[in-house]
Image (cartoon, rainbow, N blue to C red; front, side):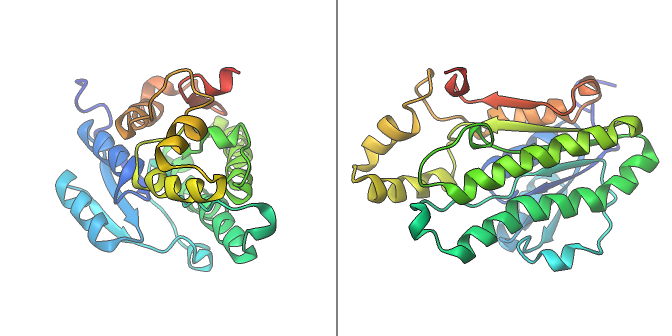
Length: 251
C-alpha cells in the first residue's frame, strides 16, 4: 500500500467539518484514501466539502443530543471536532450557553463514540480522535464553559482508550493552541471587549502570550496529526493528549 492510500477502505466521520480544522481533517483523511462523512450544522458547507473530496455530507445538529442516542455508526475513524466558544466572566455566562457547550463538546462526542464502537469492536480496528484544545490541559479566565467541556473530553477520551484497547481501538486527543479559523477570529472581538484591548493587542497579549512560537496554529498542521493518529502506524498510541501549542504547556 502506497503512502497515498494508507487509509483505503476506511470510513471516517469528522464533525464540524464544513470549515476550519474539521474541513482540513476531512481533506487530509480523504487524501490518504478514507471515505469521509462530513458532518456539520452548515448543510451547504458540508455538501461543498463532501463534493470536493468525494465523500458524503451529514446535516446534523449535534446539540440535539436526544436524536443521537439510538443511532449506529459504521465508521472506522471518528474525529470529534465540532465546537463553539463563548467568552464571559462566570457571573455573566448564561446558564443555557454553558449547558449547550457541554452538550456539543461532551455529550455529543460520548454519544458518537457509543454509536461507533460496536462496529469498531467487530472489525478489530478503530480510531477515535478528539479535537480538544490547550484548554483541555490548562485554564484561561472568562472561558468557564469551554475549559470545562474540553477537560471533560480529555477524561472521556482516556476512558475510551482503556475500554477499546483489547479491541484494536485507540482514543486520543489533539490539543492545539489558537488556530487560524473563523472560531478564533470571532473570539478576538469578544476578547477585546472583555479585556478592554484592541483586536491586535488581543492576538499579541492574550492569545500568544504563553506560546513560545508567536503565530497561530494552521488547520493543516492539526489535520496532519489527526491523520497520523488515524493510521495503522499509531496503533500503540492511545489515551494520549498531544499539545500543538507552540510551547504553551511547556511553561
